[in-house]
Image (tube, rainbow, N blue to C red; front, side):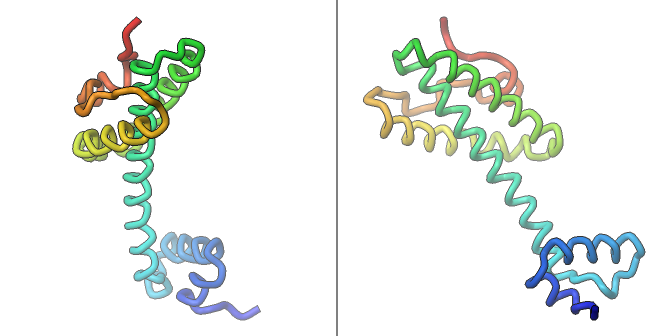
Length: 148
């Protein structure tokens, strides 16, 4: 079997491209590294982590809004479980990439606005225009912030 050029491999068999790229990097065979696509993939990882953080934070705010402003006591347990699970997931993301804490703070308001818009479509409840929840990472991720 003839070996495909590394750039062709990227387009035809991504898993094999990864395997070959790792092998080349480990053996310091830099001439056989598809640098252009490798750089693109690494940049993509950073974007993926940011999108994941945004998605999870929006979910946290959505369930916190429901728990605090929607009077459906039979749903409280599920919403509280989702809040706790989402806090844990966000904590893991920030544990693995602590530098995302600054990004976390810059997107809090946008994520809250998205959550508020989503919940306003789903429930006939007036939700606060401004985020009523803690805006520091430690409190937001480690404490229950609903009343009663």
